[in-house]
Length: 367
Ligand SMILES: [Zn+2]
Image (cartoon, rainbow, N blue to C red; front, side, top):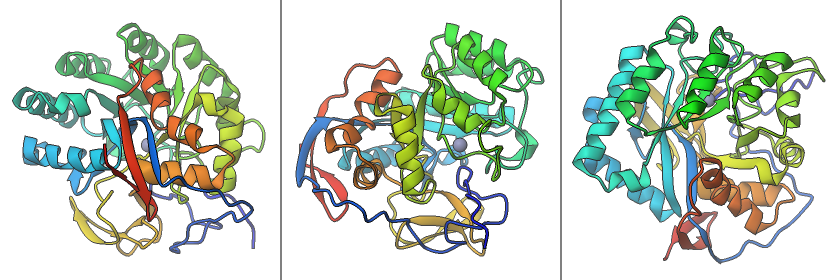
C-alpha cells in the first residue's frame, strides 16, 4: 500500500486518503519519549489567532443568532482553559455575508464593550484564496474571489471593522494579491499566506510586500506535491514568515509537526486551534448549521457519513500538551508558542498571567 501523505485541508480532506488512518478514529502517537507534565503552571495567558467557533457558537454561521450572552458564555469557557484573547475567524463567504458578520461583531462589542478585551479583533481567512481543490480546503468555491475581481471588498471590511481586523489570510498568487498585501500592511493588518498553491516567486513577492505568517502550514494544501520545490518547503525556509500549526494529532502527524517546528524554529512558530463550533463540546454528534458532525473520543471531527476531517475540535491547552509531548519542545516553549508568540506576532503586549491546573489532558484555570 502506498504511503502518500494526506494533508488535510482546514478540516476536510479533498482527495482519497491513503495514509493517516483512512477515516479512523486515530491519533498518531510517537512513543520514543516520555515527558513529565507539570501539574500546575503559571505563564502569560494564551492567545488563539484562529477560532471559527467554540462550544456550539459558530462564527461562520448566521450572525442574527449572535448575542452578547452567547459570546460571553464561550469566552468564559475559553478563559477556563487559560485563553485570554482570541481572533474570531471568518472564512470565505459571499461579500455581503462577510460584511454582515463584521457588522454583527461590531454591534456585539458596542453592546458589551467587555467582549473587546477577549475578542479584540478579527481574522479574515478568504475569500482571496486558491480555488483549486486541495489548497481551497473546506472553503466554498462559489465564493472564492481574486483581489482584482473584488477590489472594494477588503476596504469595505476594514471600514466596517474600524481597526478590528488584525489578520488576513490570502493566497499570494492571485491577481492583485501583492498590491492588497501592501495596502493591508500599510493599514497595520498582518497578512498571512494560506490556502495557496503559490510558487516560490509568488511567495517571495508576498514576503517582500509585507506578508509575515503562514496560516496552518502543512494544511490547506495539495495531497501530492513536488518533493523539494513546493510551497511548504519555501515557506518553511523563509525566515521572514512565522508559521501557525494545528497541533491536534489529526491535522499533522507528530513527526511532521516535529519537523516543521524544527525547520521553522520555535521562535517563529505559533500554535493555533482553527477550532470550529464543536470545540470543547466533548465527544458526540452535533448539528452545526446545516451539517451533522461527529466528534470522536479522540476529538476527531467528521461529517456524518463522511470519513474525512471536518474541522478541528482542538482547544489551545490540548494543543500545547500535544506539541510538548510529541516534539522536543520544553514546556515553557510549548506554552510560549500559544501565548507570547501569537501576541508578539500581532504587536500586542505580553498577555496577562494565568495559572492553570493540568489534569486529565487539559488545563483548568485557577488564577
Ligand atoms: Zn484554513
